[in-house]
Image (tube, rainbow, N blue to C red):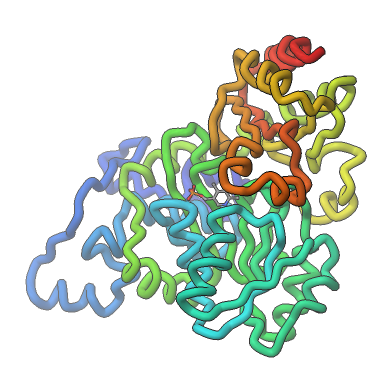
Length: 396
Ligand SMILES: *Cc1c(COP(=O)(O)O)cnc(C)c1O
């Protein structure tokens, strides 16, 4: 397929060798653990280039490689590696750059398990210290740099409070100082934000969200230079063993074909829902980078070309029973964790935090029981708004 075609076209055809599969328009699933060889010489030769030859599915499988090629193209990276979950991809990317005694800088509202990996697991096991900053200004990162700073880990927008970091500025001074950068780009997806083109070393995703998009797969991916991804493939990928299943890869292949069109619809629906919520008297605040009065609007427009469907809002009341009445009255919005699928979801972060933290610490987080997170799906947005409206009517 000619490489001058637009992305939507490439997602249908790029890297698909149909003539090898009887012309099948959907590629078969290579549901096998190993690959056989003609003779001693052939398998011996395959081992000379183990990241490019199919020998064993913990290393390379054709159903997985096809999707990796598409995702690398999508994100504008040289190469991609799929993993069995977003956390497998994130931990492999982080471990790739770090050694005991290194220092990491990241943002305060980073995804919870990534935070636990850095601040609990790596701190205890590898003596790796992490400094947390708000990260809204690039200068905060520069001020936090120490002699042993090896990695700056970004998540922009962060999936909890939707704060942005100036990706190009952070990548620029990090390169000058020899510090590596990783970004979790799950919220924006490569459709709306291209961090590798801004100079970031590695881009990571939970494919369980928009890249998968149908709430039927858990997976992750790391995208970057040929050199970094080959090193990750032979080290963190093969040795820690967080491999991607061929069937799961096939599901993501299906999903990638509709990613551009899905993201536009998520954006349109989220804009409509956010505008409705913002104008409602029983809502104190809406957090969505697509809104005209979003605090970091200029930066959002500089580095993103669109906005996905995950947002949060705060109910005006603090009455826990009324808040529960609202939450339980929703009919279309389903109650659940995760996000980025075809269906609309709601979750109240307080449900998790109140279990994990004492009441005074919860207060200091700046989150209230009235904070709601919604993933706006692909239903009709009038129906979603009507659903929210009838549930808001439960509030006195
Ligand atoms: C869900 C999520 C992850 C982790 O992905 P899994 O596929 O659940 O392991 C990482 N980062 C962000 C921002 C997420 O929302």
